[in-house]
Image 1 (cartoon, rainbow, N blue to C red):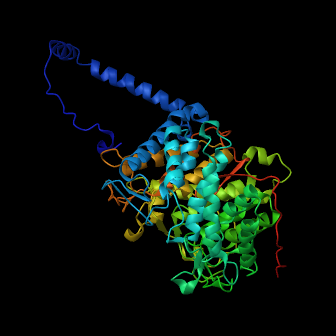
Image 2 (image 1 turned 135 degrees about the vertical axis):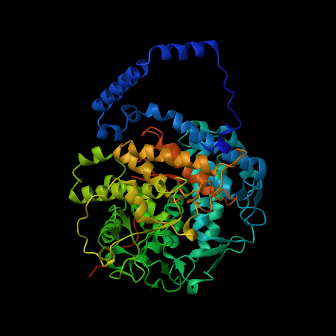
Image 3 (image 1 turned 90 degrees about the horizontal axis):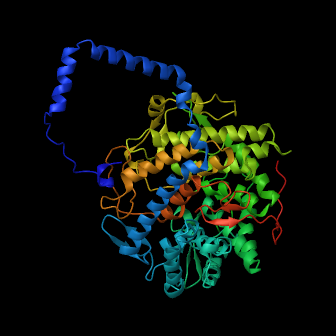
Length: 579
């Protein structure tokens, strides 16, 4: 760790003094001039014998101890300590405020009275980490201070996944984790219902596609002020887990039907190969522009296909997921020039156009989603023993492994050990032409080649404490049981410790440039640092039977919902026949 973060600076070398014992040894060596050479020869034999016993391949393999959960207990506790440090700094300097600036030791609001942005987003992490006193403080703040009756425009998507998702997750976990429950837990659901009813007005568009924003007090949907009034496709299609679960809890089906109507409208566009453009207009329900990507404005559309299927067991979303994943494999997967790292490129001109070798960090959600889609929450070994396993699932898991390595490489190549927001890959021209989905060779495990393949532009060099890679590491570990994903996660956590923890130890901050060490700092702690990044790292080092993937599904903000194996409501629409 860097000296400024560990408090280990300030030790000076003591002046060397000759002692009688030291003089005796020098005299003895002088009297036996051949002795040093003999000792060196013996050491060389010992070292040579060790390397004979441990060949190079063995040295690259994890030590046996890393296969045991007990080995990772101390790692999990260090992550928990990092959360406590972050939370306590927020509580000390910015309690009740929506943002925390850990360098200047202050908070700021997103609305006149605050939306509980950090507190609500962190509720289930407090529960998972069993921080009961801090949870009690947060619950009391909700009860006494939080109101959504504010004349404030909020983003429909962000408010749904963070605030509604956070409240619903807290409601669920309060029934599952005994130490997290209290007689005041009704507050989670009552606040969730109030918020969701205010958000419903976002769906009062001509097509049912939600408007980009909503005014909470006026209960009015507001179209986007940019992009010709279009909504982000990912944002419109990433409200379903939250709205459906609320309907199941309350028995009021309006939220379920509003959410699934969005999916029907999007699917009726008949997107080629299941790949959707990144804008859709709420008035018409038709896509705008041609750009296709799995980064910003496209990402969680695909994530919520597989997660809706896992949440409610509705086959229609499993079908849409498989179609989209096949389209991704056919049209978006390509490889780098030097190390053959496989990555998800972008299609600025739509399906059939030339690829752009750009990849957002946001895309790193994908390998984890592929893994849980292939195994449906089982381990890979368990899934192989079911009658559903086939060559297609095998290829999906191969791609998940390759993409996880590519996401890890984006951390491994930087001076800080932390990934930037966006990377650009070196690629042969032929690999940027429209794809034929030809088989691709495995990538090389060669850091020098990775460095040549991965380009980081200064404008893209920020690190916002994002969770996507550690989410996939968590899911990949749970599915494969391969400890390499825990090891990579630990390296990422250590890099966060070295470079994002503030000098006085009170909080963690996002960065402006990961390519230099020490990096420039931004003076902002993202709420998803607490809600997602540290939660996924904690779960990565936890036993598999803690929140098992066969029982729960995580929303796009890492909030925990139950898998509804017998859903209360049925799918209310059917897909149109494809050409």
